[in-house]
Length: 321
Image 1 (cartoon, rainbow, N blue to C red):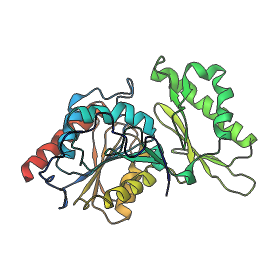
Image 2 (image 1 turned 60 degrees about the vertical axis):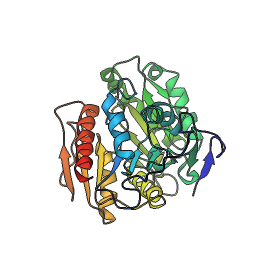
Image 3 (image 1 turned 180 degrees about the vertical axis):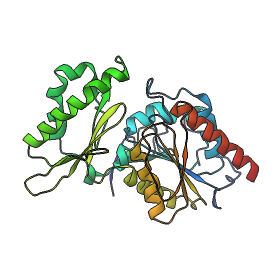
C-alpha cells in the first residue's frame, strides 16, 4: 500500500517507553470503546499562530484517553516530520502508554505512522504523490513578492504546501493568498497540468486528456496542492485501516476540525455506516445540513474549544469505568 521511510524498525523511538512493558491490559484493548477520535491538527490541536500545542490540557487529556485504549488518530495536511517534532514528543513526555491505539495520518492521507513506531518513521502512498514539477513551478513565485509572506514546506512527501510565514500577520498573508493562487493556477495551466481550485468556487482547467488530477485547496494559513484522491476522507479511510489492525472499533466516532474540508472525515464515516458526530471548532465558515449530528463551537479559539471537548470526553470515560 505504501513505502516505509525513516528509522529501522529496531531503532528505539525517542522518548519511547524502554522499561518493562505494563502488564495490566488497557480498559478498551479488547472491547469497543464508547467513542473514538479523528482530529485535525492545525487549529484544533496546534495553535495556528505558534504552530505548537499551547494548551497543556490537550496533551494530558489525549494521553488520558489513549491510555484507556480509546482509538485516536490525527488526520491532517501536516507532514509526518511536523507531527514527530511538534505533536508526538509532548504526548510521550506526558506518559503515553506504548500500547496506545494512537495513529497519525498526514498530508491528507498521503503519509502515516503509528505512535508505537520508531521516531521519524513514515509510510508514503506513492499513488497520491504529486509530480516534482509542481514544486518547481512554485519556487519562482516565492522568489518574488510572495516569499515574504509564505514558504514552501520542504518536509512534505506527497503534497506541495505553501505555508504562512510566522513573521507576518494572518491578515497580511490572506491579503496576498488569492493573488498567489491565481499565479499558481496560471503556472499549472502553462505546464499542461489539469487542476480544480477547491472549497468555494471550484474553478477548474482540464489537461489535454480532460482530467483534473491536481487539487488546489486554500486554508487559513496555507495553500495546499494535492492529488485528486487526497483529502480528509482518504485520511479517515487510512485511519480506520490502522485501527482495524489493532483492536475493535468504538461505538461512536467524533471528528474535530475547523474548516469545511474537515467535514469530509464525518462524511466518509457516515457513508460507511458509522455513528459519527462532527465537532466544528471555528466560527466560520459552516457547512449546512450534513446527515449526521454537528456540534458548533464559536465562543473560543479552536484549540481552546478542542480542550473543552477533550475534557468532556475524559469525564465521559471516567463515568463508564
